[in-house]
Image (spheres, one colour):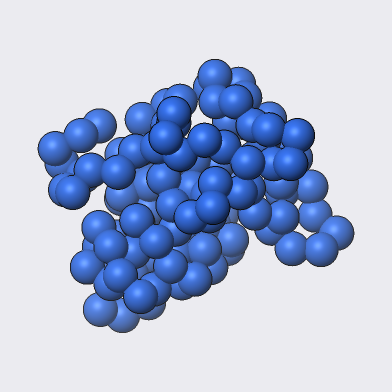
Length: 114
């Protein structure tokens, strides 16, 4: 799978995450058949064009610990992600974490859920 195919696969799965739910970079990697590529999933989302249509709900992808990513130094990405998630009804703790037990979306096959 080349880089463009990988990114397209990531975006296809992320679009399936229902509003009010989150999943992890690692779970996205697993669903596209590349379980050791969670960091690459993060990179695909980091460089996402904000004007892509249909939109890709990047805010619904978090770390395996439930933490929101800072999106790099000097950015407001973590704040934007928290605001987007809270607008969908997802609770974010003061430490920037989401309960995966309460809000997690972890289907074995994305076409089966969402």
